[in-house]
Each structure stands twice: as C-alpha cells, then as structure tokens.
Figure 1: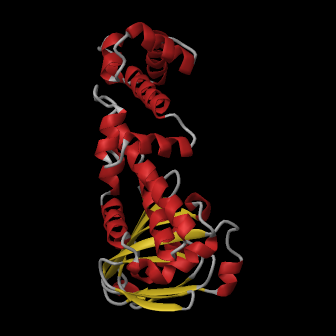
Figure 2 (figure 1 turned 135 degrees about the vertical axis):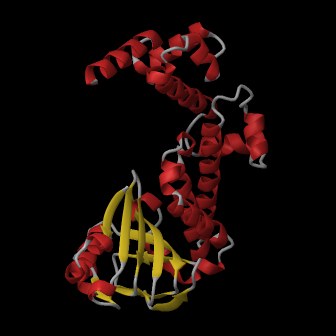
Figure 3 (figure 1 turned 60 degrees about the vertical axis):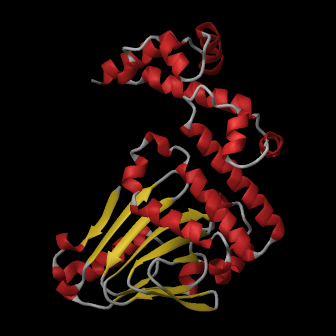
Length: 324
C-alpha cells in the first residue's frame, strides 16, 4: 500500500494544495474543488498498485472532481477505466451525457479519456479500481455504451459486492497466498458486467465464457494440493459437464491437464525454495503437490526449470544465505 495523503499530517493552510496534488497523482489530471477550507478539510487517500490494475481508496469532506475536455484530450493514449463503489455519502456523476446520483453502496464507472464531473457533499468515501482499457479487451464504444445501463445488468449486484469486498479488504487479500488470480477474477467479472450492460451479444457471450474460465482457474489454484483434483470434480463444482469444461479450455487455447501440472510444479518449486520448506524431503513436497512418483516429478521439474529439484533447493538456499 502507498498512503498518498492523510491531512492529519498536513498543516491546515497546505491541505487544499496537498489534496489536489495527491488526487491528481493517484488518478488523472483534473480540477479539485473543496467544499471546506483550511483546517476543516479532512481527507485520506490510499493506493495499491497491482500488476493489471490499481486499487484506490478515498475518504474526505465534500469534494468535486472535474476533468475538462482539454485535460482528457491531452491524457494518455491508453484510456483508463475506473469502477468505484460509493462507500460514504451520496455521489453525483455527470459523464458522457448521463447525470445520475450514486447512492451509498452503489457502483459507478468512468472513462478517463473523456470529460466528467463527479462530487459528493459532506463526509464521503469511495473505493475503486482503475484499469487500462486494453486489460478489458473490449472496444471503447462497448464500454461507453454500457455506462447508462450498468444497474440493469443481472451481474450488477455481484460485481458491486465483489469490488466492495476487494477494495475494502485489499491488504488482507494480498497477504493471503490463496488470493492468487484475484486480479484475473476481477477483470473477468468487470468484463462480463460491461458486455452485459452494453447488450452486445457477441461480447457478452465471450465475456461470460471468459469469466467462467477465470473462475475455473481460480478454483484449480485453490485446490492444487488436493489429490482428488480431477476434471470430474472441477466440472461439477462449476455446474457444467466435463465435455463443456474441455471445450472452454480448448477455445482458450490451453490443455487443462498440462496447465494443472504446470501450476503444481510452480507450487512445488516455490515451496522447495522457501525457508519453511527446507526440512521437508523432496518426495514429500512432490506428493503434497500431486506427484505420486518422485522420479516422474524430478523429470518434469528439470524439463520445466532446467535443473533438478535438489539443485534448485540448494541454489535458493545459497541465494538466501548470500542476501543475509
């Protein structure tokens, strides 16, 4: 986490300017209008830069953010899309010809490559993700077309709840090894919501299929050490047939069985290189990650990483000792 601003640490006379600088650095250039002045300005901004997105939390006294046509025109070539859950007060959004009130607990979306006007009065708060458009793999006209219709999508409550929990518990989630794939899941849900709200059948079908595949991958990652992780169980957990499971994987261009082996090898590699795994035999680690034959495991490991499990463990131990 990067704490961008806490006005409790700022002299009252400097708070308005500090708020402007922090907001612009965390999002995009815009005009920041404060409802209060001096010591009455209260704000805290936190940012979590992730691999494919940025999580951003803002809590403050009344504020208005105005991005002009000129600022948008001079912005980055790759549009930035923000999806925010209003977690305090009531928001007001004017964007792409749409004006709407955003009650607490509801979701809004903004395309930073065009002008907008967003505000709240009194003590308010918002938590959002900011995603480059290319990560969504959807045309910009589809994203913009979805904006007025987000609340009408059947996915709206699901995605709103997901983003609220993601942004509200981001520290704990990032510290949990089981959260691997969290960004992929989030992008899949957002993509499906936008396609659904835009009512673009082709994009909606593709996004829903990709979301299902994202959920399947996340499920597999959570159960990699389960000895009975088989296609039958994976398909049943997602209420689809094995045939449909294999079809989804084939359409995405990967082999389910080979991908599972790859993920298990990566899990075993990480455990063998971790200080807590030094007391375990290589065969024990192999069995924990679904490899019942230690010789087969060693061959697969060497093919994947260019060295034996024993050599990898030795090198990882030597590197840790050299860093100490």
